Length: 286
Length: 133
Image (cartoon, rainbow over all chains, first blue to last red; front, side, top):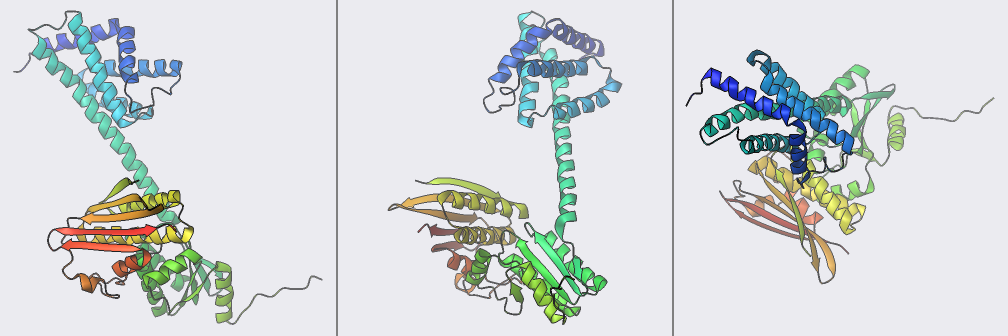
């Protein structure tokens, strides 16, 4: 059943008119409904005046979607969704807010006699045309924000991931902090080999002080990296092995016999210097 | 007392989530740092097996209380291909993926009790317990 353009416009106007006239009433009713949402605390902890302001803003946004012409509608919708995201509500809360808002308006218009048995279907469809795009674009805006955050964090993480730091001539250190997954293991290997060649390192210290768990996979990657380092003509040393990690490595039965390992980076550096025939000495001040 | 929570394993990052959950529970129960490391490493191995071999599954962490002794139970369940030869995977150094082959026997050594049930083509259910002493 296709509704005539003129009729649709009329219904839209009626809806907008009703909302504008009964603005405060709708908002109060809607706020009541939202307060009853037990799962979300964002409304309950909000101070009253801030809540009123946000609610008003929300209602205005909902209304503006009704009044706009079709051309401006799309951009408006995106604006709306982004603004809603900025309100800082959870997504479930926002979808509930949108549903409740249309519910309140629909019931209000029914009570006011604007929606009758005859035009019920038409209005029902019109309400859906109003609400569904709003909800869709809100969800899209949320996922867009999330995706952006996740990809930014991924980049940030990658920057922290694995850098080889030359500390002395022929001696470099790679501090590893955080969880090592397949992607990072690959990065470690690449940066390690590239760095060894670039810095002409003879000894590389892999510092795992900041790695929370060393399981067989992590150990496997470390062993592989060390083997590769040996192939390009340098020695690899594993440093920063915490006591509890040492115990789990032994219990797991991981063989690190081919490695020189030390508990701290400091001792590792001393050992590395010894391998390259150097040592740190104190000088008398004079 | 049996308090449980679980993590679905679908991606590599879920392994981290499972591990974190296990560490928190272990800490709450009063396990020391060495046992915490053992428990998280065991969870890491089991979760990685799910991720690598079954594709998806679940890690469940339960708090136990038996005869006044507290404990933690890790359940790793999946509907993956199952393990054709259990005796072989429990041998050190056996791996089908080019890894170290220390995973399952390692978990058995890390924990106090270890039970594995697997039906080829239907899935695997591994239960590992650590008691607080």
